[in-house]
Image: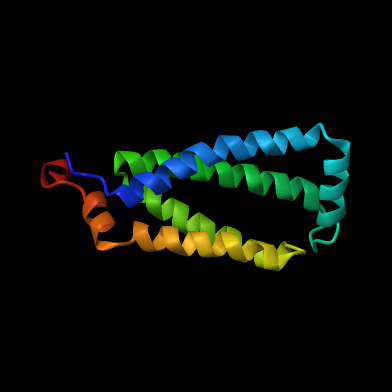
Length: 136
């Protein structure tokens, strides 16, 4: 059994723990009329006409991808880190075209770059390589 780099463990656990907590926070928003009004007002500034539904679909899909990727990273599944990286890039590109507050994306993009750096590091690459007996 290969030793998982600490950075991979930290990133994976952050994804696993934050996904359901974020989902609960968003679901809680549904029951807060003031918060829902604010979300609808902000999303009405988006160029997409069905902004609120699209926003919730994207957020929940993103959370599912993060959760699955985190579990896969803990198990050493190489595809899981690429799923996280590729979906995050796609999500940021979509956000750049649809978000009315692009400046608010900067912290998430910076965190993503740090995570991607560690997920693509030589230690991580070695961990995610399949063992010789697994490939035969």
